[in-house]
Image: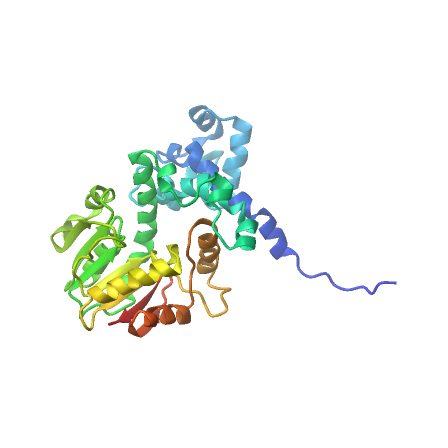
Length: 339
């Protein structure tokens, strides 16, 4: 007779079996326009179904799931947005993440379906998923509006993390803060607001620059220059601290080393490089944001996330010293290296 034993708690497995369904509730709600339809106020299912051209019974199921997930509220048979849904999931919100959410649903979702192949081969899944040899974003962002919405989505992430990132490190001794690949300039804006001694530079591709200029707020416009260029190919703007926000984790080791060498050569003595990335613990099993991004980089890009020790080794190999790591409660941490 087999020996009786207490079964382990199955909750961790059961939760993960259905976790993808939660993401798809968010994706479907955004794609169907649920949150935009509710931004003017509460609506009953019948009214909302008519507006969105949806089956009423099916829509009610989706709305109930959105209530369960904290995206909607329900009272007296009427549904309404939560403050978070209005802020991050409606098309006219300056904090909207819709561009990145829709990209996650339309592009990343399919690539993650091929995660096993990425693990077996150690390469991204562009070829397997889309028959593309690289991350050819222009294949997906075929219109100016699509490109702008993706950048807006990344901007929303930046508004969450950038103020905390620039507050984590003393930037009082620096004069010019140049953000390479700075997109909307959210990191530079946060740095200039937190450290009034700084002059800022946002450096990004020429096609991004018109969008960048639209995002620089009036209170720091006279302290921030916006310059077009490719940080791999073109001369870098002059600065005594160069920032790379969510850049290092995108690229292969050879490309990263070339970029860091270029930054080191451009810096004056005492200058620094400022990396804004989420740093893995030594176990590489936490924090959650970094661990999942580590897998995401395997699946969709050339790079990876790193531990504090790995960032130190990387920067020291490029000549930087006094490498320090400053963790934050936001989606990004800071690693600083000094010339």
